[in-house]
Length: 633
Image (cartoon, rainbow, N blue to C red; front, side, top):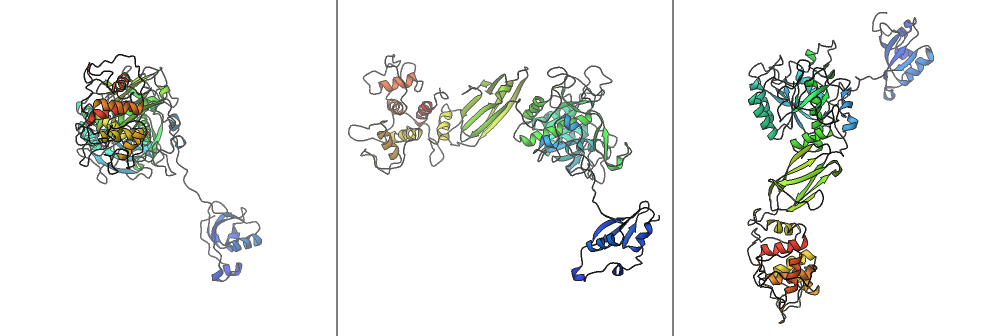
């Protein structure tokens, strides 16, 4: 049967009664099917096209017209015109191996993570890739239509495994919403040089890449490349590289550069049976392994001639195909833990790897198969909470750790509880190192940086012996600075100030009001605390009915106030170590109690200096020790 558009010989108005235009029904596209050999029936019907090889014709009919055809031509079948779309994107089988199917990685997609692919470029017009930008570092031969466009195919293939779009076509990448940047440092022949590679890495640093994928290799150490990669790592960039495909040629250590550098995560390749891909390099530098056999990914359509199906996708094998799986996993972790350092994310990759081969790290698979773990229970983390002078850190998932420690500038910080540390500091940047040992003997060290924005008193610095005490009182909202932003640590503290600090520490009512003391009126800022302290039996004042709020506090008076407020136990029969404190003094028992409890220390080994006036720094030290003797010793 010839393909033809039939002329309607029988006017539709004769065949099918129409209603008025105002009441016309909406027509829909349908297919009309007649028994074979009865194709001539179509000439009597309002069809728009008859197919060549099947007894079908196209028509656009209303419901009434369809009903009339069924009545007049019972042998004709009317079929709905079905809608078709390209098959939904394929999830690569390798994703099951690395636990990176969408079901496993939801809700994380790599969103907001900047990934640089230093390679042959990326096909900028590929419908399954969203290239945010890029750079061509080649001294010449940058594509004219787009400087970082891929005219080889390798970089596009790598990019697809990392971040092919979740757009119901083609394939989907491990981290489909990661921000892809093409760094074209290799030419059409897949080759580059030190200059182009170094310039490409520099561009990645300058443009704040989070992750850099290097599916490139060279056989010898390149000092310039090593140096710039170290610089990139120091700048917080995670660097992933293919270990090389020298496994069949070299029996020993066959890992190539740059994967061999300490700053780089070296990735070996697995076969489809999760065994070592025959070509995959091996050696001590291998950190993790990932699928590398017959990996289907994006490819420039104009170059897609390898598989006989020019659809923009092709399958390749090698460690170049394994590395981007790891890059994608790290993009997911980076989105999930945005504040984690590159060292911490690298450790997370190691600790969540599925160990295969020899127990522990080995030269074939490293720590094992790189996997994305949606629930992480076997990896210790240090939770840091900080603000207003306080830094609190605690080990999470302690069952996964054998031993741990926290140091600052090489000095071990004492735990306030098992796996917990608490310290108080003025505003500043503080750097710690959290170390832990796993049950298998692996030791990891994590740098921890904490930034405190308060307290910011002009005359308070971290190197002052009392800075932690004052920072503690500031955090507890017990001690405030002056109007000009100072704390005045060396000024003598008055009795009113001391009672106000003590009252806040004990939660007394500080509302200004009438007191029993004739020299403390309602206008005194500490009147409420003074009256509350009197009612609580913490103070009694002088025999003449005064309190003398502006008088400086002596060390003996401090002992009486703090002991009355906190009531530390005392051994009355114990020997007083201070020669200038005797039993005839009103403060004897209180000084002895504070000494025995570790709250008050002597002015020297043998003296207490009970009549010495106290400054604000010293009183802060005593008051903070009274509240937290476990912390301030």
